[in-house]
Amino acid sequence: MPALASHRKPRTRLRTTPAVGLTTAALASVTLLSTQSATAAPAKPAPTIEEVQKKVDDLFRQAGTETQKYNAAKAASAKQRAEVDALLQAAAERAEKLNETRRELGHYAAAQYRDGAIAPTATFFLADDPQSYFDQDQLMARMTSRQQKVVADFRTQQNEAATKRAEATKSLETLTASQAELRTSKQQVQEKLSEARTLLSKLTAEEKKRLAELERKKEAEAKRKADELARQQAAAAKEKADRAAKEKTPDQSSGTGTGSSTDTGSGSDSGYASQAEKVLAFARAQIGKPYVWGATGPSSYDCSGLTQAAWKAAGVSLPRTTWDQVEVGTRVATADLQPGDLVFFYDDISHVGIYKGNGMMIHAPKPGANVREESIYYMPIYGSVRPA
Image (cartoon, rainbow, N blue to C red; front, side, top):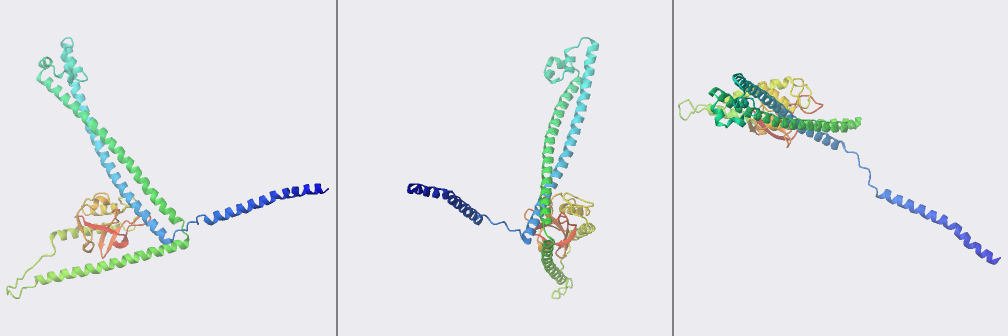
């Protein structure tokens, strides 16, 4: 009996061991999960309204840059298409001349045949490549001067036709590349705009209200700077007028009564002012029309499309993109801006407006907005030019 009792104790201990092991494993699992939860990266906080505004503005600016790439590719494609059409037309004309000469050579061959068996001269006329016979002196000696001229013309026309075909082929390859670039730029614009719209669509009503308030503050600050520029320009204009009036006052010390006079209003300044009036009259008439990227009017515009159309109304042809427009005319400082001048924005020169005076401009701002008047300080200024 004692031996049996002694045997049962170990069996009892063995029966409890798995339970202890399970509990230990469970505790270890809980500890591991707790440790993982404690070390896991916290959820990324939602962007602030200020960050959303900055991101949206940046996306619209990037879309503006891609729009200028699109405009450049479109202009290049149109130019290349015109060149291709011209080359194909020229190639067709040369082919027709070549055929006419070939027919004339055929008439000579037919005459040879009527006179008897086809002679080497006729074989020359009917060959696809008469040049292969051209250097045979004995054959040339049997040809009349008229026949020799026709052969020479045939040779020239063959070379010209081949050259035009090669030029047309090369131009077509360039056109294909321009069209591919056009499609890429269009896709990039659409992607940037889609991303901006998606960001805005996720805002709550309260967030949209706060975003609108930030926009009003930005506009108010830009207007304040415009008013300051207007005061500075008015003061500078008054000082210039006073100086001119003083210079026109008779010189009392000389007693001549004529004094000295300096003409401050040159003919070129007057001519520019006249052009600027036409530019601004056109631009004002477009206020309220929507911004559409790639548009040049008359129902919608992008920024450089508006400036191009406005200056065209004054008889001045501007290139299509902001990058080319900034190279036209004379550079002017912001303090010296005159109505009609073009003001460019951002380091990548992706936006442009028409200065109307008092620190204000007329421009086509961005997708979702209409042509409007706005302070030139609404965006970072790159520089300005006077086109004419």
